[in-house]
Length: 412
Image (cartoon, rainbow, N blue to C red; front, side, top):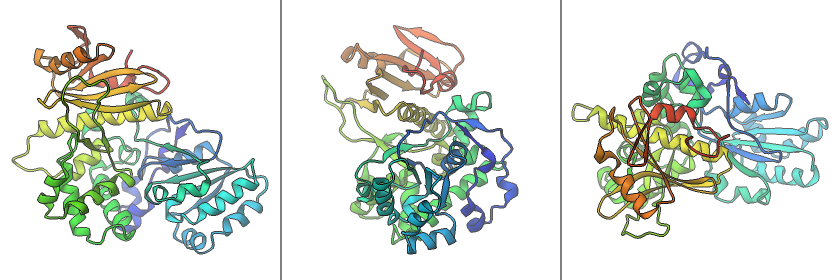
């Protein structure tokens, strides 16, 4: 299904921050997305700007729409949820109903549930940029019958020859940002949008200053083991508050944690998860930098996150057949990602370097001693495909361009 990049804009960016249409006018061609929708009712979740609404309009051009980002529509349906029933019954020939940003009016879910029971032929597509209220029980109002799906930032293979690795590392692959004439300014506005609208105006955080300090502090944990106590000390905030902030980022689909791989463990290993912001460009926009920050360190973290967001998108679009982990021993030997599940078993190490040195594959060698069943892959910034001591070394750009959900293997 194609995404019309001309339609990918956030009205809130314009109305709240004064980002004019000239800055958000999108000139790129429509782009095929790898997401395949189910035939039954489903939630389509994803952060703002990933193209959920644009995708849905292209996929279901004749659907009935309830757009809760529109203030008048929001006021009407939040005050009178039963209006949704009147809309559906007044349009008997429409069998697909799209409710955009359903989390803004979760009281509509009880009406959706009733209509689903009565009208078996009607399919509901419920888009949302926050899982917070759904996690707190709203999902149960549909009796568990609506599937959960996620729309991710662009994959490199979706962009094809429009993909630029250096640009992706700097600005990320959120469609809104990719299509912008002024990506740096749009990223700043995007960052502010979530603090002010989703967090402050949504009443999710009492002290917005504490949350802003937390965002800066946790950006240094991108690609690292999450130490909540250290972040709390740096923010001068209680640990429990920081734990709540981390959960809030996950609920807003802006961040996630990946667990340690422990199956059939032969060595003592770390127990804490690693933390990542969902997009490399968002990470770069949140992370403060100065004269003491090394550019290669930030780019290395961005590259690692970029690879992970592709692995997560590949797995998600394939039906979540696998899990993504990392592996680290107590002695500090670490493999960035372990993919384990129905589709296979891989260990992936990411290096932001132009050459492969013997020491770069030491961690993969150690992992393969414990797990000879796994396929080890090293990704680096060079141009040649290599095989060293049985370990495949692949240019990172090549890897990103070839990984796609239609393929069972992450690399062939």
